[in-house]
Length: 423
Image (cartoon, rainbow, N blue to C red):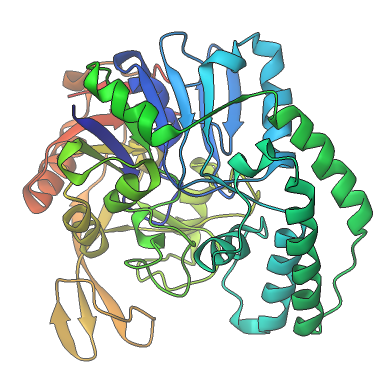
């Protein structure tokens, strides 16, 4: 009855969508368990590049059912755009895509609230994607939210109106200049709701329980990354959901004892979008080269990602709190050409050398301690087998495996699904 779990170990953008796409052939069900359209999972195959925001990354495979779990928050307008973009692929969306009735809805006023809240913070802003994610989760925990199942009730519009009116009062409270036409936004929202109601709504926890009883293979797909977890991330510069392994249990209704393999994904270096501390950030030519070669721009926002060397302190922390059983290293190809590669192995924290992730990793408290290794000059993008990898890259992998005490089973050498080496 085990459910395997795949999640990111850094600040998101690790390449989870690609690996889910690669692994889907081995599973019957792909189930997304948290987050919203602030995620951007990029898939490349057969000359096609496609970005998904809410829909699970197994959608292009005939063998798998895709479930949007109860822990996800759904913006009907963005969801409709995703569906429209999938029409050219002639997929059987009605039977391949199932949505939990307990998933919460992002309303137009949630997005406006997000913008007003962020604007009111000034220089202290957290770098929100302004997709309304935070306000939606606030309504969820405040027991005010609207859920997918509410759309099956005759009075869902009354519930919407009451919540939207409350939001407008809250927007006024922030006392910032937010220009909007709510009537226009609501027309777009209601049109999207009509299309959303054409899809299949399910009691997802029961569906997944029965699937487990029948021996179906299930892969839980996370969004964002462990260092953005609301509890264990670099708070307050985090997302509004539990991005760590525990989030799969609450976001899908899967008991902890039913979690099987935990697959952790990380880049061969580190990136971060938006505000927040980043000890190994490189604000120099090396960081610029990483960003340019790695095409480091947010799949959802288009914002440039901050780049830096691999932070082993943060990575060990993420491995431990998630109970990772297998590792997958992405974008090894981006580091090709660097003569020397650095790895942060510890921090100098308030004058003391530490190897664990402390409470506060702001630059004034933390200085990274680096180990240097030889880089690899070879182009990796055409390689297809593990024995083709350069010796210095294998040295890098061996060192990480020794330090993390977890095997690295996959090395990605390019964005396409074929550019994936299994070890």
